[in-house]
Amino acid sequence: MKKILLSLIIIGSLGLSGCGRRHALKQELKSALAVAVEQEKAQAVRMEGIEGKLPRTFENGEVKVDSPYNWVSGFFPGSLWLLYEYTGDEQLRTYADEFTRRLEVLKDYKGTHDLGFMIFCSYGNAYRLTGDPYYKSVIEQAAESLASRFNETVGCIRSWNTGRKENPELDFMVIIDNMMNLELLFEATKLTGDSTFCRVALSHADRTLKEQFRPDGSCFHVVDYDPQDGTVRSRQTAQGYADSSAWSRGQAWAIYGYTVCYRETGRQIYLDQALKTFNFMKNHPHMPADRVPYWDMDAPGIPNEPRDASSATVIASALYEISTFDVPQAEEYRTYADSIMSSLTSPDYTAAPGTNGLFLLMHSVGSIPHNSEIDVPLNYADYYYMEALKRRNDIDKASNK
Ligand code: GLY
Image (cartoon, rainbow, N blue to C red):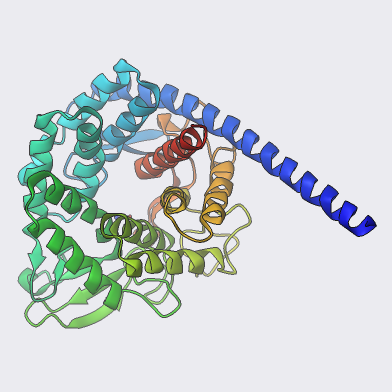
């Protein structure tokens, strides 16, 4: 009897502290969103004075901006749309529309696989939230441009155009990041009724699943295919520590990308891959206690290596989505995402308003091998952070119904 009473007391107190933690997190997320609104509005005011460009990072005391043709161009307008969705603030909608239109030139651009990132974060959110046919037409056109990079023999969309400089047509590099561009194609099939876009996306997802992953669930960054016969020539890294290492953002792109594929198709193999890669990260002996990964989980100087907050945001956002599927352990995925967000909303990662070049999060890494953007804010860390905040908010709203 004594034992049962003791168990009840323990269960009761665990339950209470669980509720207490959830309440505290809710407050943290609410104030994080308020800070985000303040920072992003100020960023919009600043960027209005810089024609045709989008903010990217803050380095050496300077905000770095980029042209629409850079792969990161869609994240700032996308962040403004997410904040508009959260607040309903018409000023944010006006800014979101203004910066989205800076990307219209991309709709016929066939020089990159990153159109998914660029167009889906900006125009995709714009159309989802407004239903304006102007945004729809840009999405459809951009999906055509992206699909033009598909090679039937390889079964993939070509990522990069570089590599064999003297003979670029012999090049066919596919990077794991490319999984993030498929959402644009799924959407294009829904908008146009043309199943070609979806077929291209699924072919890319299937070949990548077969070639880009290791038995432990982690993935290579780059697979180089022969575009003439479709065979794999090599598996490498570009932004990671080594060909055989686990570059953290690559793992995050894989988790998120296959989560989208599962949402769009219901095929279990995609969810299995997303979870296998997530479990690899979660159980990695180098995963820090605050769950914000090192830039590469095999970086030689761990624990004295930079963290990459951007990887953490992408993983958190994907886990919130997974937690809404009818899956075993949904609660566990949500709790893991909550713990990431709790770290990110703390002053260890969230900048004080008015600082950090008006970006939200500190401590991300662009590319250490290229000695570029090390331990800085990045606009994509902020975008997926806001998406994760919004997804958490949506989950709360749905459970309060
Ligand atoms: N897509 C490039 C990166 O993740 O850094």
